[in-house]
Amino acid sequence: MRQFAPVHVGYDFECEKKNGKRYAGQIVKVAAYPRGTLVTIAYADPLENDGRMYSVGEMSMSYRSI
Image (tube, rainbow, N blue to C red; front, side):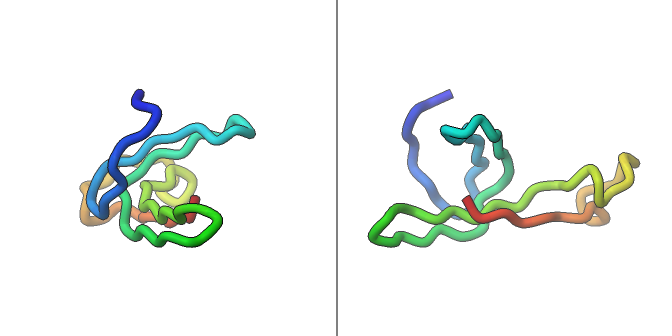
């Protein structure tokens, strides 16, 4: 995994924060602020999907800002 890479809408995103939490998904929004960059990702939430297999169009997506 690269330490730094371009952050663009539509790219896949994966990171591990300093507190040990890991995040992965597809970038849907990028915003630059004086304190840093806020990245919003969309990911398939297995808890929302009841662990069942769905096609991409039927899958419930969740969003998280990192």
